[in-house]
Image 1 (cartoon, rainbow, N blue to C red):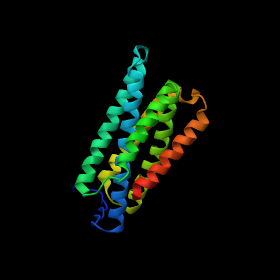
Image 2: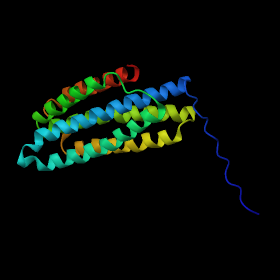
Image 3: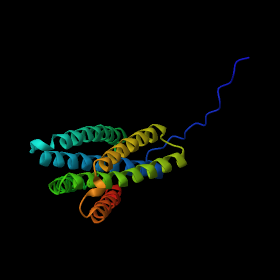
Length: 194
């Protein structure tokens, strides 16, 4: 007698225009903004360190992290197009501010650049986890959940690299990371709505 496949509960489709669809558009919009900002941070840090021959190791690490963020950014560009959602109206503000954050922390030294990465990735990890939980609770968008989970793991990898490279040894580490985290949380809240 053939075995029956276990019953798998069907995921409810998300109808365009309903509250969950709008919430998912907000998620994609803010994640697109965050990945845009991450690319700008890493580009700025590379520009500072890349000009110095003795900073090749950190420049290579930052380039690898930026490449990962480009994968994420491209995925969110695709999601915006697929969903006919708009990016945040503040994207033109987040790019230069993020570049300035990257350049500023790099000018303060390697440890501060790594502290920046750790702070940003801490907030992003929490943010992705909240999105994952919301989608799983609504039992929708399994592909998006899988993408969020993968990206969350990637960001944790960046954070762990930053810690291993001495993020906690940055001058004024508690203050620096508190300020960066507050900025990230503010940018997330604004990008979800604007």
